[in-house]
Every structure is written in structure tokens, then in C-alpha cells.
Amino acid sequence: MATGKTTVGKLLAEQLGYEFVDTDELIVARSGQTVAEIFREKGEGAFRRMESEIAHELGEKEGFVVSTGGRMMLDPTNAAALSRQGRVFCLVATPEEILQRVESDTEVRRPLLEVSNPIGRIVDLMQQREEDYGRFPQMVTSAKTPDEVTRNLVGIFQANPDLRMSITAPDVRYEFIVGGGILPFVSQLAGINGPVAVITDSNIGPLYAESCGHADAVISVPPGQQHKTLTTVQSICEELVEKGLDRSTTVIALGGSVISGLAGFVAATYMRGIDIVQCPTSLLAMADTSIGGKAGINLPQGKNLIGAFKQPKAVIADVATLQSLSPREFASGMAEVIKQSLIGDPDLFAKIENGTWIRTAGELQPPLEDLQILVARAIQVKINIIQEDPFDRGRRNVLNLGHTFAHAIEIVSSHAVRHGEAVAMGLVAAANLSARLGYCSSTLQYRIEASLEATDLPTRIPADVQPQGLYKTMSIDKKKKAGRLRFVLLRDIGDVFVTDKVDRAAVIETVEELKAF
Ligand SMILES: NC(=O)c1ccc[n+]([C@@H]2O[C@H](COP(=O)([O-])OP(=O)(O)OC[C@H]3O[C@@H](n4cnc5c(N)ncnc54)[C@H](O)[C@@H]3O)[C@@H](O)[C@H]2O)c1
Ligand SMILES: [Zn+2]
Image (cartoon, rainbow, N blue to C red):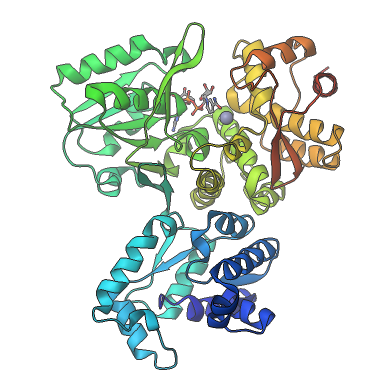
């Protein structure tokens, strides 16, 4: 309330040449009743259904600046619908400024504030909604004119300030902050007090450990999956003990997905659990694995067989660290970015497809501002899905698009194929299978292939892979359910679903067709 949605929304629409829509006004216009009348005559449920319809309708359209009703974005499916092609921002102001704005607005009555302690009432409302609103990038409007706020928003579309999103896990809530050059501010941004132990690998430590500021211990392990073991966990824990680090210690996990999982496991178990801040340094970790709280280590019998859920205190993604990533690792991360875009952000896919974010000749990567937006949008897809399915009841499985194929390809190639590369092959396979089963046209496969190729990713399954063998590997992979394999299929970009009704023959035909010569 009174954070400037309407004023700023109209100014922004004017600047961008878009149309401005207020969802409450749209409902009133369509139903021919005031909001109060709808509540009285049809009930709140009916009003929420109208909001939801509008969210889904506008989510499909382009060229609109939408100001939403106060409670509309509390429903995660509305939030997901409007985030599919659009960018969602939450305008915020201090309680004092909100009260002042409401009081000076003589046109509208705000019955919610006709109480003895309006500031207290505003603070209550803010606290109630904080959790749900917090996951959108916050724009502070206090002490700013509507013109200034509008300029800031336009600035964000053209990139720059840190982007913040909140993730609500069943028992905690944490922020994902992405920016360029923010590693030196990790302690302030994550609110770390007390001793710090940086856990990193020997590629990354020498480059960035010092940037994290004072640390009571910097523990470096050799890079690579093969070191994600109990032996490494033991050596890290022994070093923590030797340095006299107790339960008040915060771990900074500085590295790619391997460090993220390893340090997460240490933090989950050392002295029955200590805080951890994730500082992903690979594109793959930034765009995918750094949220969700999965921590794990490998056994000789298989990957991630021992693990725990360990939610971080915060995720601080500094895209400046990506500059030292090798081109092959960068491309691997792009496979997950493209995956996220296919799951829930068609506009992100279109930008990748159009080459908006492809590096220019001679450059290894796009500029930092672009990387920041790329990471923010990819992770927003994952946040929205997690939020839609907080208790992991099924919808989250869509995040595994391409992964049934990918995991099996990694295994049969004895991990010669990188995870991201296998995901690239898996995405093509998922599209091929979807078209084969009549869910989409084969054009979709070609578009996905072209985007992956432009990012230097492989799109064909290695020639020595035997389709029957690959199918068998898939079947024994741990993700099988009730004896049937599950696949994530595409109806379109941004429209994916999980099914276990796929015939073996169709999968084998897909693998045959996609094998390299
Ligand atoms: N099960 C899954 O779905 C799943 C999902 C994602 C990742 N993974 C696993 O994670 C691994 C891939 O993720 P990753 O790429 O984050 O792994 P990683 O941690 O192994 O990083 C890849 C390499 O890049 C180096 N590196 C990372 N950041 C760097 C930087 N800023 N500058 C220079 N070098 C840097 C690392 O030292 C390492 O050698 C794979 O082993 C994969 O199996 C699994
Ligand atoms: Zn993956």
C-alpha cells in the first residue's frame, strides 16, 4: 500500500511505451462491481479466482506494466505466471513514509488504517507479507521521487545494482544476491558475525579467498568430484578443530557445485551443524545448485549417496568471478541456464536464441551486467518452482528437464562428458522425445539445438553409447519411481511436465536418432 505502484507503474509504462494495467481496476471493469461488492456478494474466494485468471492471462502477454492488488502476489502460482515472461519487482517504503503518503492522499479512504495505532498496523501487515514479497527484487522508494524510482527500474532493465531474491524453505528464509564485484562485501551482505572458515578448492582459493575478507581458516581441497568424499570431509573437520573453531563459526563455501555440496555437508554435521554462506563461483552453481540446500558426498558405489539438507544463511553470487572460468566450464553452466529458460522463462530463452547474451568475437563471456541478469533470471525460475512446491510433492521434478538422459550419459561415459554437456544432450533428447510422442513439433528440438550449439555445447550423444545400455543405466538410476522411469517433457518453451508413461521403444529411438556418427 502506498509504495507507489500506480504512480511509478504509469510513469514506467510511459517511458517504455507500454500499456498500464491495474489488476483491481481490471476486475472492477470486467465484473461491473466494486471490489467491496464482489467480496460481499461472491466472497473473497471468487475475487482471488478472478485475480488468478488475470495473472495467467497477463502472464502470456507482452507490452504491459502491471500493478497488482495487495494480496495477489502472495499466491505463488500468480507470481509464477507473471514471472514467466515478465519481470516482477516489489516496491517498498518505510512504515513512516507509507503513513505519510496515505494521510496526504485525500481521495481514497484506507479503512485498514482507521485504527488507533496505524504505524503498528502497517508494520503488522508488512511482517505478514514480508516472507512472500521478499523473493522478488526489492526496490526501495522511500525518500525518492516517482521519477527517480522509475529511472532506477529502467536502469535495472538495462542492468546494474545488485539483484536480490528471497528463498523460503520450510524452516528458513534466505537471500540470493547477485552482483558484480560483491565478494568483498560477503560478511555484511550475509550478516556474518563470529569466526569464519572459507572452504574452497585449489583453483579458486588463490584467486578469490582473500577477497572474502578476514578468515580464521582458509581450507583448500583439490578440485573435482573425485574429492567429494568422506576422507575430504574428515580432513576439513580436523582442520576446523585444529584451528579451534567452534559452533559459532560460519563456513563460506567458495567454489563450484563440488565445493557447495562438500562444504554444505561439513556445515550440516560439524558440531551438529554450523552456519554456511554459499558463494558460488561457477555459472552452473550460480544458476542452479547453490539454492535448494542439497549437500552431499560420493561413495565409491555412487554419487551423493550420503547427504543432508543444509539451507544457507545467504547465497552471494559474484559474477565477476566467472571471468576466470574456462570456456568449457562456462558453456557447461549455460546448459543449466538454457534448461531453466525452457522450464519457465520463454523470454530468457528468446534472448539466448537471438544472441543477446552471446559473447562478442574475441570475448570469452558476455559483459558483467548481462551475466548478472542471466544468473538472476535463471535462478528466479528455480525459486518460483521451489515456491510452488515447498514440500517437494512433485512439481519440483520439472527442474530435472534433460537430466534422466544426462545422468545416464555421464555414467556410461565414466564422467568424460561434463555434467553441463550431458545436460545439453539431455535437453535435445527431451525435446526429441516430446516431439516423437506428439507433445510438440520437432522445430522445438532444432531451436534448442541451435541455442546450445551457439554456446559451444554438444548436442549429440557420443557414438559409442549403446541405446539399450543407456536405457538400462537410466532404469537403475536412483530417480526411478515404482519401477517406471520418469521423464520431463516439453509442450512448448515454458510449458513442461513430468510423466512416467514413456515406452522404452520411444526412448531408444530418440537415442538412436541423436547418436553422433
Ligand atoms: N546431480 C545434478 O543434477 C547435478 C547438478 C549440478 C551439478 N552437479 C555436479 O556438479 C559438477 C559440475 O558443477 P560445477 O561446474 O559447479 O563443478 P566444480 O565445482 O567441479 O567446478 C568446475 C571446475 O571449475 C573450477 N572453477 C569453479 N569456479 C571457478 C572460477 N570462478 N574460476 C576458475 N575456476 C573455477 C573448479 O575448480 C573446477 O575445476 C559436476 O561434477 C556435476 O556432476 C550435479
Ligand atoms: Zn544439472
